[in-house]
Length: 386
Image (cartoon, rainbow, N blue to C red; front, side, top):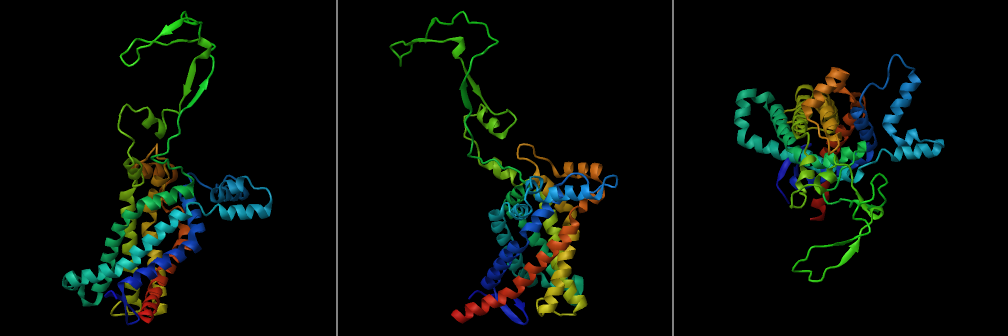
């Protein structure tokens, strides 16, 4: 079995069981919390105020439900059928969400003990000298959280695809390009050509020794209609380049907002793991944050989750709006920030904070707690089968 990397309740948890436990916790988190995560993303991406003091409260509620459930609410008819459609409308992009969330939690909660152990082995003496024997482990956990957060950028394409599905943004495929439609129609505003109904011959060539004659009439001219020149499809079709369209262009488009995502993930993970370790240190007075019982793990996970959401919330708003922009019309993060502050004020940086604290905090708490508890269970199961 793989070497131990973390400890839960005094018991070392090997690498593979810890990763498996983190994967299971990510999947369970997604199944439970994906619908409300979709609501939070839609509220973040909504421009303008939902409730206005000059308008009735009922009108604000109607707008709120429209933002949350989209067409399922605006096209509602029967109450029972609307309830089912409304709930189903909260599961767009679920396959992408499964891949993203399981990968993220496996990397996050499974990799954090590994990085913490490596930092302790290589730089433990420096952390002790700078932060003292009593508190260096808290800072050590926060530093490993920063490394974990910065590395999460690798999952940004999966997150971008999930967000685009949740917000209803279309992502054109790099290989899908519908051919232009060809129709035959008269040109009513053209006068008859002097060459109409006369024979027209093609110039002789070495490959066509025999010349064929054809008759062209102005009423039989062919019109080729193409998509608008502003679309991503037309930019490839009408390009003068002889090279095939590159798949990398759409792949790079999924990395839009990478810098803001890195800032959000880094600050959020520092707050998550640092606040959790600080709670175990300052509140429960544990010498080693990894030696905590069930109640201590739960409380520290709650504190860490709330801290990560509050710290990373403003960056998440910008990231979501950058990802929500159409592929053909990308926007920069600073452009989003300036527009948001000018039109909606600084308070808009914390848009969706209520649903996040009500849902994302329990979501992160659940995943962090389940990862800590499932690791030892998976290790016991694997030991029993060995």
